[in-house]
Image 1 (cartoon, rainbow, N blue to C red):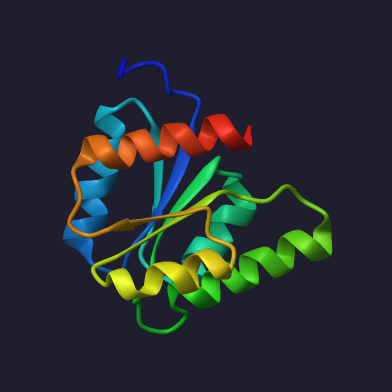
Image 2 (cartoon, rainbow, N blue to C red):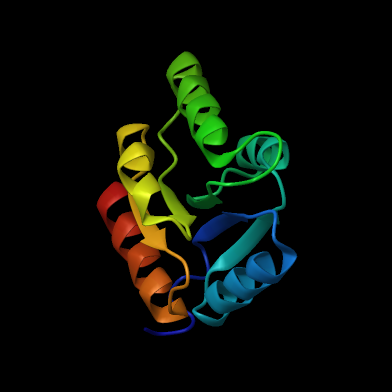
Length: 131
């Protein structure tokens, strides 16, 4: 992948674990994506509304508003406002949540741990399909 071909693609990464948030953010930046980050569900919803990212990468298990709650509120907001559907990749260390995430409106799922190149390919693929 060319490191500069994604400079206009804005990705919002949401994870309550600072190490993972930094790792994913730095990895995607290295692939040329513009990265926004949020450390909880409420912040993710605020940023997604105000910054209009092209895609969200969302951890499932967070304290307070978890990833499923974020996904539900995001999809409800999109329906109520008629706005475009924000593509969402859910990520988790538990493969058992993939079906639930997809059935609740996620576009894809990636299992932790993952290689940065695999995540970047998923982001690129979803952006191509949805934009």
